[in-house]
Image (cartoon, rainbow, N blue to C red; front, side):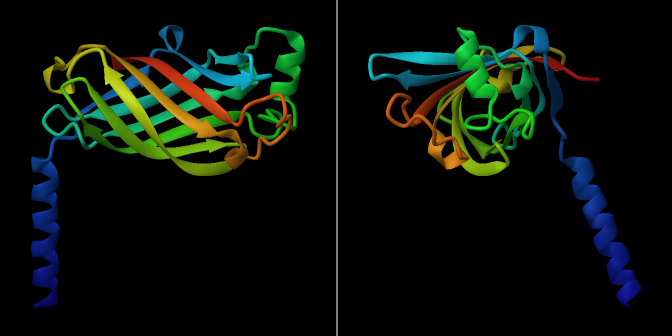
Amino acid sequence: MSWLRSITLLLAAALLGAAMPAGQMYRVDAVASNLSAKVPFLGLGSKTAGFPDVAGTIQLDRSRPQDIALDVTIDATKLTASDDLTLSRLKGERFFWVERYPTVRFVGREITMTNATQGTVEGDLTVRGVTKPVTLGVTFSKSPAEIAPREAITLTGKTRINRYEFAMTSYRLIVGKHVEIELTARMVPQG
């Protein structure tokens, strides 16, 4: 009787899995995507780092937009800055330490839509080997419920982090602790 129950459970799981749509998988268009990080500097202005090498995927189900699978990886070794000294410091051991930690990664688990095109994604950000929960405010160029099956979409995401939580504690007197992060990702259908 236990083998019959096992077969019944296996068949039920297979039927439920077949009934649930997997959604559309998209990949980041690296040419049309970027990330920037801005931090207060000397209390008078700010410094901005650019991350032009963005890769990743997003899986969206038009009928269940809350079921999101977002995975974005940034190549920290290719970060840019306004001057050579800032660039050197950002890539060094006191900040991103790109020789040891060459990537930054965000993995989104769940989205809560606040209207047709905006929402918040709960996920985990990993920088310098430290992973912390982060809420990413997102805006889609079009409502996920209205995206045609093979249509590209642009996702803009914003968040604010405390750099100290990611072991970037140097230059406390001249560099602010909160970092404003903005991601623009053009997502193109995969497959």
